[in-house]
Amino acid sequence: MFKNNNKIDIGDRFVKTDDPKIVWIVVRTGSPVAPIPHYRVVREGYTSRMRTLSERVLLDTDFYRRVD
Image (cartoon, rainbow, N blue to C red; front, side, top):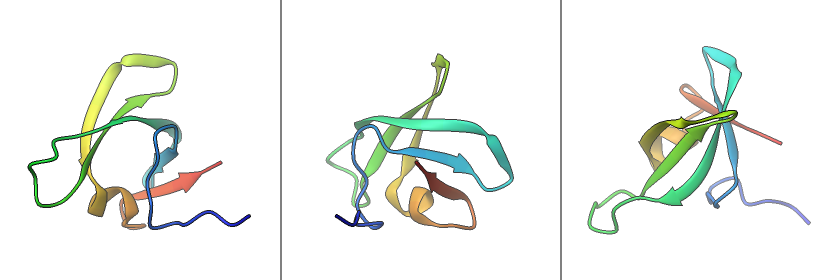
């Protein structure tokens, strides 16, 4: 089965394009009020390190890349 690369699910993993050693894991969706969906991500191994990122940023390969 092929994964839809335009859909983000809880548990998906991403790395920043300019820092591919650090993995960020999607742990929940953000505010449903925002016009662009947002996601909360945590750094793998350091769950106190959190970020909220827009769907657009996570799917833009200039910024982030999905990893298995």
